[in-house]
Amino acid sequence: MKKNPSVKKSEAAKSTSIKSRALGMAKRIEEVRRRQRDEGNFDCFGRAEAGFCDQGGCFFLFECLDVSKKAWSELGSA
Image 1 (spheres, one colour):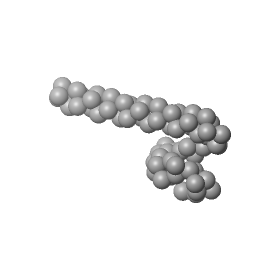
Image 2 (cartoon, helix red, strand yellow):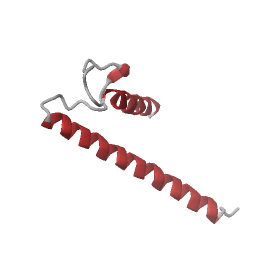
Image 3 (cartoon, one colour):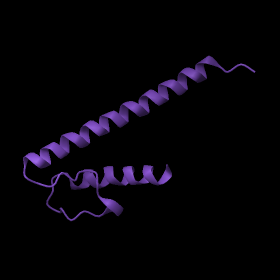
């Protein structure tokens, strides 16, 4: 039985989209960590384990917790 070529293209597009989002997130993480270092803070963005961060005054706290949650859930499903 032959595979439907449109399905194959759809799967390739989905894979490309996922890779593109991952690359965008990696760039964002590095951008924020660079800014944290430049400001003299810990470059810990996206590293909050179990949803905990003791850097309560950080401008990026809520985004960081969201990114960390996604990263840890992906590690758990790998």
